[in-house]
Amino acid sequence: MIEIRNFTRFKLDKKLLTGLAKKVLKRENRVSESLSIVFLGERKMKDLNKNCRGKEGPTDVLSFGDGLNEIAICPSVVKKNAEREGISFKKELSLVLAHGILHILGYSHGQEMFKKQNNYLKWQNRT
Image (cartoon, rainbow, N blue to C red; front, side, top):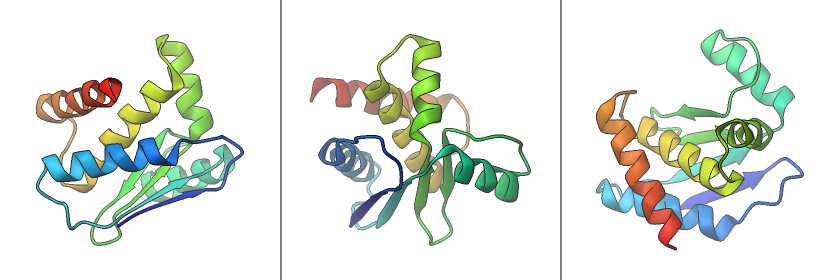
């Protein structure tokens, strides 16, 4: 089951996000995994980033595995990153979601993880 909760004013395509999440879980042979995706404002994300990672300021995505299987995403940070990179909000959001799911599944930053998330982004762009 994939649950999406949006605590921001951003309009999000839940069908698109759910589809991508299901695709990543299926491709990673983790179809039975439940996943909660929470969209937060900058203030809440800043607090989470400080409390969980000891880092200042908001971040785009945080992943919480170990049975919790929750991803926190800050759409306003995602939007700023998309503008900086010259890509669409939808593309950056899809990349961040795939990135967060891969972390929950045990991947760490590295070539394999980045290759996988880019492959999922290519799939997302075809839909």
